[in-house]
Length: 183
Image (cartoon, rainbow, N blue to C red; front, side, top):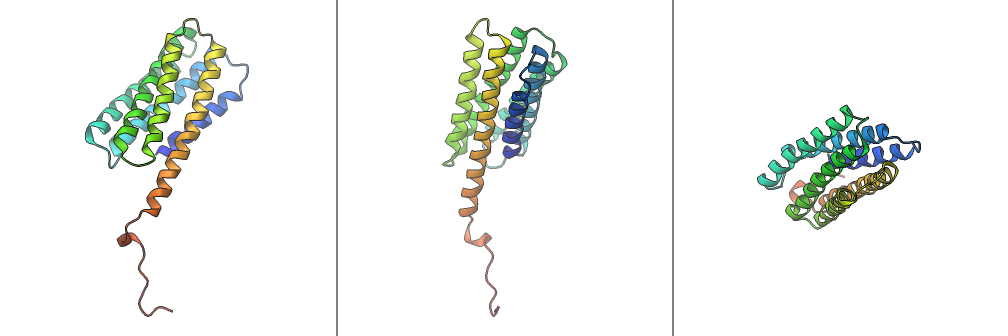
């Protein structure tokens, strides 16, 4: 599921790059779609995630649903004013970033710290956007698209590294045994 999260995030960001004539409406739709997909995948990871503590999974599920709800609001109000969209999207990023930090802390695997780094990047970006008054649509879109592409690619890379490390660390009991007498 994390690969799907990374691919969808990077794909939505790259799709937004293809629309240089972006308006507030397009920004609302792009970031609304990202928040909806991210929130639903985070909620699914909270429910189906294995190996993470129950408290983390519960919080991830609840925050994922809240992020998805923010995405639905953005999709339903794509023509809302730029400041409202900036606020909604930034709050969604803040929640997603906090989930990423928690995933890195709760992970306990060598690559988990990268989840925390990605979450920290998203959180820092959300805070910068929230405290910067008068941020216009073009600036917000550039910041947002860069964030989506970088975090999406980062999520894919970290997940691939985790899958690779898990494959090399498979216990001998899970490896196929040679047959006796086989030629």
